[in-house]
Length: 129
Image 1 (cartoon, one colour):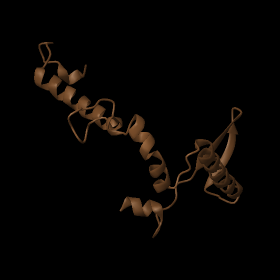
Image 2 (cartoon, one colour; image 1 turned 135 degrees about the vertical axis):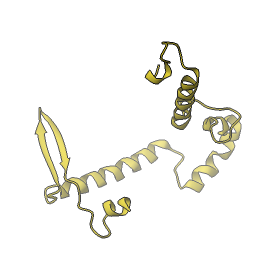
Image 3 (tube, helix red, strand yellow; image 1 turned 30 degrees about the vertical axis):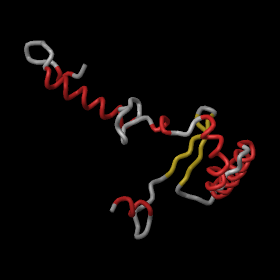
Image 4 (cartoon, one colour; image 1 turned 90 degrees about the horizontal axis):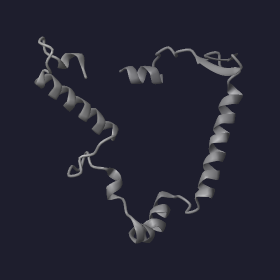
C-alpha cells in the first residue's frame, strides 16, 4: 500500500487509495499485464488472431506477402547468418574504435562505451532536439 493512501488518523484515505489503484491499472494496461475485453485499444491482441482452419487457409498468403519462408528452420538459419555477419563486422572494428573499451573483470568480459559528443547531424544531437 502506498504511504500516501493512509489518512492522519491511520485509516485508509479512500480518494488517495482510489487514485493509486487507477494509476496501477493504467500502468498494467500499458504493459499489457491486464486487458479490457470490450476495448479496441486495451483488449488482448491475441484474441483477434486467426485460429485453426482460418489460420491454415491464410498462412501461405501471409508468409508470402511478408517475404518469409514457411519453414521456420530456414528462417532462423538466415537470421542466424545475418546476425553472425553483423556481430563479426562490429567485432572486427572494435580495436580501431577509441570510444569503446573491452576489458576482463572477474573472468567476464565487459564493454565500456564513451558517450559521443552531440555534433551536427549526430544521432545524439538528433534525439536531443
